Image 1: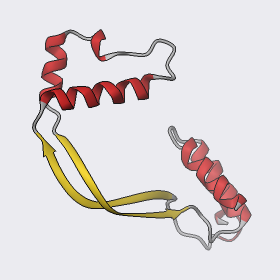
Image 2 (image 1 turned 180 degrees about the horizontal axis):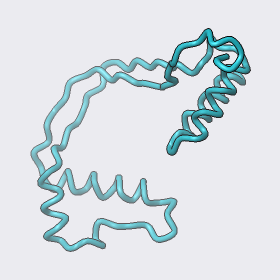
Image 3 (image 1 turned 30 degrees about the vertical axis):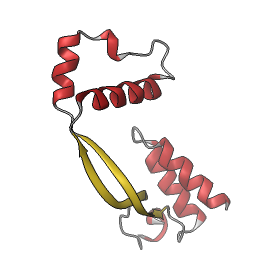
Image 4 (image 1 turned 180 degrees about the vertical axis):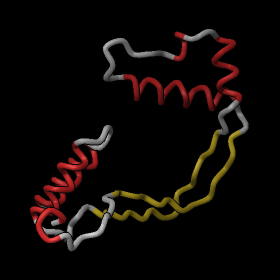
Length: 119
């Protein structure tokens, strides 16, 4: 580890997915609004007072929706890759976890690193 022998370089842990397929643009404002509403319900579900699209003035929502391009992907192939310190020693992995735990929004990545180590 860096603290012991200085023989390491910075590296990043990540998960990535590449989706290959045919993309279609959806020029249908109702389709976009329905999707935004569904995604809002899904992503606000764990909140104490979930926000709803209907909470905002209609004029505001329409303006926001005009800035969204609807797309649909007919998926032909999915490729995934994980770089989760799997080639590192336990002390190095713990050091990476300790460093990530000091950053906002990294808990999901920490969980993936820990889960991968258990395999």
